[in-house]
Length: 364
Image (cartoon, rainbow, N blue to C red):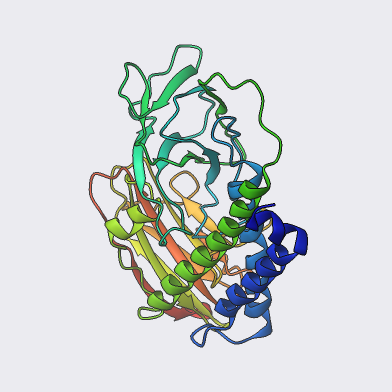
């Protein structure tokens, strides 16, 4: 047996995995993080959620020759300011192979495809290697389409890769989740391999190590972001576009990120002087860990399709613990602090939101 197999047989592989998890858990007790049982419990739950996603990425769906389109974030697994208006999907690919995506457009507002060359476990980045979205996607009259994913340029719908490409990220964006239908997608690797190989012990060990590396990199990265946001509480400055691009952000989106903190009798009012011509915009509230709040049962965001617009074209959004009886109210869902994200997609101009904290009884 080689060294890896010996460590598997002795149990060292599992012991090392558990020790690494204990190390990652130290991020949850960083000194700048609010020290209360609620935030701490959400932090440890956050670790379990990201770890679950990392197993999918590096073990269950890691074979680039037999790719599976799956959801790395969903209604329960959340990280990095996941968007309630997004149906996020992912797939393992390799720049050494060519792929064919077959799809049916559906009725969602937009669909984008992004190939990536790294992960949060590789230096805290998800650098893009190719991009295609519905602005340039050629769709047949019946709603069907095909996309070639390859490192070599080709005719028709082409999603570029580079030799080091590792993953495909798909973002489907809703205007109104309750009414729209997602695009149906499937992917095929254009190689000659007939069936997947049995479990390779050494690949499994590498996947286990990569999973904890991803967990560590993801949690550390977004803890750093939340700490940085505390420098401008209850404001919404624009994020550096290159910073967002490096972690897999959509290049068509201008991101505004910050930290919020409110007393129970306070409200955060976010205002736009006007809404520019754009494909989409949205504002959402997250917890400290940059997880979207539970949008299954609470109104935690507003967007271009759901917001009430004033007669003069302005928008006012109210964030507070209790409903003030005003349009565009977002609940804090039992939280007193957290992070906040405003997204402006495909806009002709960037309009920066203004913010102010008021007593809730002063709102009317």
